[in-house]
Length: 107
Image (tube, rainbow, N blue to C red; front, top):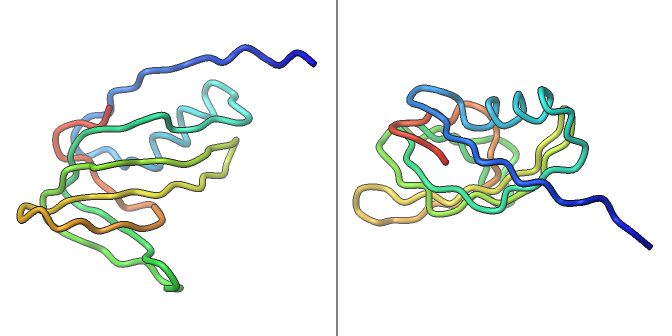
């Protein structure tokens, strides 16, 4: 059985862009059917996370470092988990809905 070759893309998102919306736009633009996040680093100035066993997301307004971002993306779907650290080093982890705004960059 032969598979399709793997293609890697490097993205740099800029201040005030929405992390999830920009990733979905990139997937649509490049007509990617089964994409995944290999790694991500950067910072946020607003984060929205849906924590484990919660039905609704929570909005966090602060400066955060992106500790990790993992997940899968399709044409109009995404299943992404984000780990962020605040200015005291406290880490918060959850499912990534929209409304997560980049502070300096996300790469």
